[in-house]
Image (cartoon, rainbow, N blue to C red; front, side, top):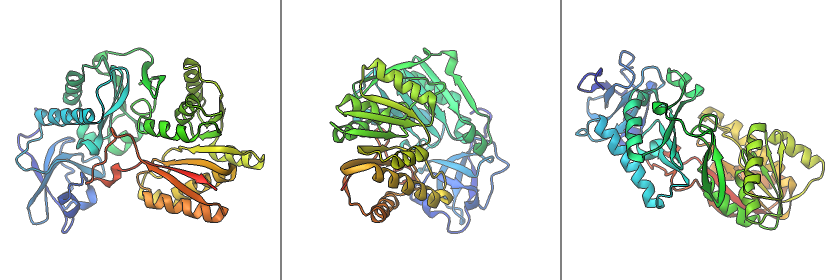
Length: 400
């Protein structure tokens, strides 16, 4: 950027704090730095040095955030400039073509932040429109460049750009929501997914519009639910329940606390002529408890709750919440029933999640037999250097 110094400035780490970054982890928190960087401009390019002055990595700084530096390059010969961002965006988009051919009427994640070496940027494509979310104040300084390059690389008709309130607070920036170049799309964008005609409101939907990470799990779980009466808990706009009903579930009851989401799910069911799907508004814990007290029984239960742990300090509380929710689900299942249970809390490890399920089985005196363990769709890759990018767990079990 023209208002930045031409050369990166250097920030030094505290003694013995360099090891995560030698392993290419992209997040440098303020407490790891000997030099705070508070005098620098947001988005300024910095060289990270170990305490002895050896070069470690290069990134962008945000003195307003506790996540002080986002690292983007571990090669001292690589400059971070407009050409650098374009190269990273091209690589991310081309990575998706390793997964599946381009399908103009479908949806996919094009950029997944740390997993695509673009920490702080998420891009989803819905047919010919993009939903773009910035989660880094440091990267936001480059948003004009990045958006122009996305427009050129994807030929998108419209790009909805968002910075949510929570991100804005943590990153010391303003929330944002606007159409790039004032080129708006229709009120709702229509796309195909799992043989369903779906629609999304990029302005008021979840983050970049909808949840794409579970779409292959929707199909896999639907196969287990054929011919069964099932309960889809925390269904949002239908997700698992719509696909299960489409693929042969006998009866689906879908529960969510959001009336607006349920209304969209009902419209999707009508648009796709799906029968045997009933939507019910209610809190997941309270509703399941009431169903247990009523003696209700189901042959399949799907649990896809929101993130329960946003930080390491919330892990224990999250595991208690998962245990309560899964215990209620087990109580509702007939012998031989199928439980598909999910966690999108990256701070909760897969082993912790499975141990929680083992405790549920012990307390309920039921056998839980794992049939499949799954993660997100392949367009949500995992960077080995950033374990936090391995966030989604989907465990399919038979409850005996």
